[in-house]
Image (tube, rainbow, N blue to C red):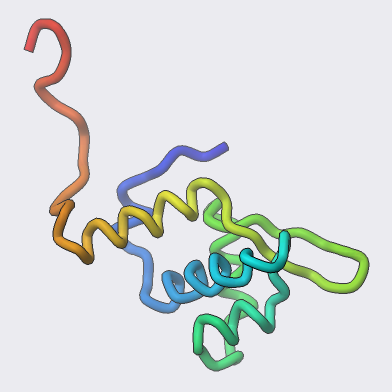
Length: 107
């Protein structure tokens, strides 16, 4: 399982965030959310969204899955972490992330 990388959160695009949110909304009813529902919930045009979804899956933010009748996606724990960090940044609770310094017994 990939670790959370600050670069992943820092350089995520707004369309990618909307797709992650659309996937989260769809997971209320589906284990694997169909592609068309993710695009519908994200309120995006269907143009290049398939490539963006597979790009998110390649980065480990969502997981690709097949059922008997459709192809779908679900959020991974890394995707949930990315959404949570984005919400904390948006609410100005968190201002920056980086390496941890000055911690431990001898600091």
